[in-house]
Each structure stands twice: as C-alpha cells, then as structure tokens.
Image 1 (tube, rainbow, N blue to C red):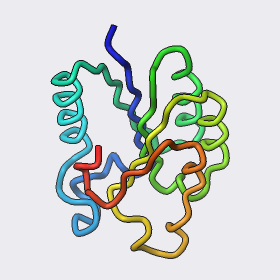
Image 2: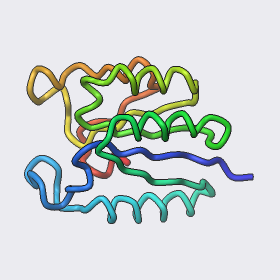
Image 3: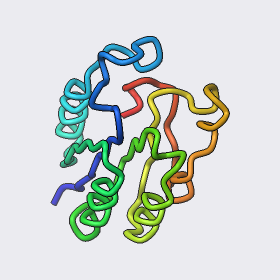
Length: 133
C-alpha cells in the first residue's frame, strides 16, 4: 500500500500566480498541485492537496489526517506565525510533518521569522519558491 501524504495550504495561497509575483512567483496553486501529483505518482505516493483561508478548517483537516495519512506537508502561510491551534492540532495527531514556506521567512519582516508550527515539524523547507513542494 502506498504512503499517503496530506498537503495543506493556508490563507491567500489560493491567490498564487496573481499576488506579489516578485515574492511568490507566477505559478498558480493549481499548477503547484499538478506538479505535486505528478511527482507523487512517479515515486508511488498518494497525496491529497487542500487549501483553506480559515484556521478552523485547517485544524479539522489536520485532525482528520490521523489514521488516514502517513504524514503532513503544510504551508500554513500567515497562520504559521500566529496559530497555536494549528500547532496543537499537529502535535495532537503526531504525524511526521514538514513545514513549507515559498519565501525565506528569515529574510522577511521580523514577525515572520518565528513560526509557531515549527515545534511540530520534523523539518522546514523555505525560500525555494513553489519548488519547495
């Protein structure tokens, strides 16, 4: 049975391709999803790709992952820096988690340099654009 990975995208990532292209590039979230699906298929992994602008919906996605997925890849976007609830959900499900940021959060505004959800992550990928996925 192939491994199953849940990929969660947070607020404003639905605007990829049209928002701040100098920071986030021109790829749309749909293009990122297709690239992830192609790569996952090529290495025998199943993925589910989700996006929500709502913190509670992201918490629910994480909670429902327990028993259904082998790991989580999450770009919580702005919630990375503010959401204790997302951190708590990630800790509660105790699934291997990778945190992703399209930009280098350590080379941005000071408030972005700290990610609350990093405490639940096995690793962080940041600054490689959408190729980080």
